[in-house]
Length: 94
Image (cartoon, rainbow, N blue to C red; front, side):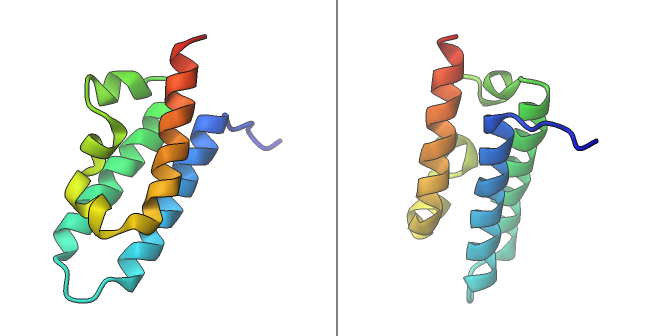
């Protein structure tokens, strides 16, 4: 039977997909930076499975955690960042 995914897990998965699309579209940018952002997004996905996203983020915003400069250069990823950040905030108030 398939495992039930939480809304945060699903949204973290969408964030990873958005980052992957941007990585494929990159031309001439250092691959290490995109790889770093992708690794951070995967860490968030793993943390969402154990409900420890807030512990991973600490006092950082999601954008700071992922890398604000990279996100500014790839605005197509921001809707996924905003959606995940909203879910994280709403889960704190439960």
